[in-house]
Image 1 (cartoon, rainbow, N blue to C red):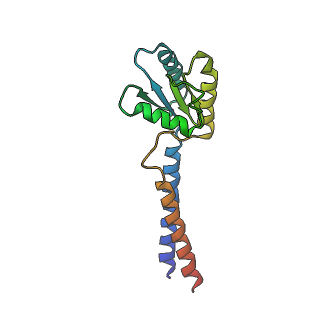
Image 2 (cartoon, helix red, strand yellow):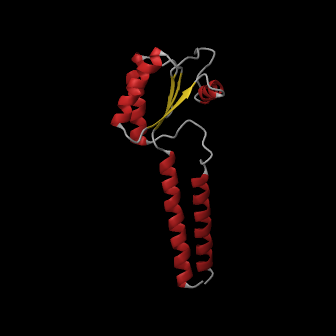
Length: 160
């Protein structure tokens, strides 16, 4: 393999790893998912807290899902199960928030400190959105292809 071709392959591998890093970084933007109901006083109070957090952390992504919309109650139940919330013990209610690894069911003003701590944890260490995303996993494929190309290039170099 010529040195020029080897350099091109190594540059391609480096570019693919850089792209996969960017994809991974985008997937870890701090994210909050809020299930709410129209005219819910507790939901409005929690929204005021979330507005403050959004002002403090402009990169924060907040997704609001109205519980009465088709599929949202089922999605909330699936997320609660994924977060290992015992649905036999906890009664469903709103607002319900998912932040990083934390779930807050029927969040109230006394939960504000814990909500702020969970957001700070996500801002500091990163966290993924709890919502399913069709784009997840693409970064892993790019890294896998990059390493396959790298090993192929090393194999070809070893053969000389």
